[in-house]
Image 1 (spheres, one colour):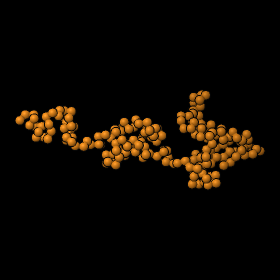
Image 2: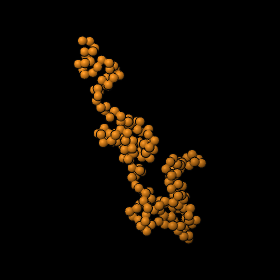
Image 3: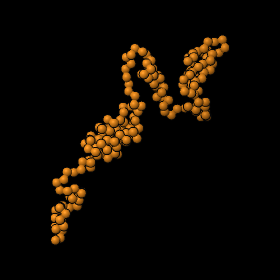
Image 4: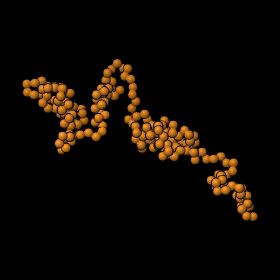
Length: 188
């Protein structure tokens, strides 16, 4: 019977070689498994939208959304070409999950709408402080310096009569002390 007889018994044909559908584990005329078209995780994470999301939200959060979208495609809820968009949809806009709103209540500091808006200078200061800074380093000498010395100097600056300042660790209280006979610069 030879090769031809073996192929006929298995339901295939002798003409299909190693690269044929039978070698790939698919029957002739069978519908290919769409799960094979689901993009790989590493390929999805290189997509521009998901790369931007990883920069904004962190790589682990984005990878979890990608895996969830891939699972939905495996279950037939999504088509393979929808995985990228589905992963992006699963992600929040911001890392905190908070959304910008317009305060149209007429109340400047509304309890349910977060904090008072930061000035442009305050936002710049936060941005500058978010990276590597000279927190405990005296740049002139290279020696260790007192933590917070520049912040305390900034607190003393508004009041020329102010001789000392202190700030609470949780930023809930800030006070200054004036020179004898002078007036207090400010107290909060």
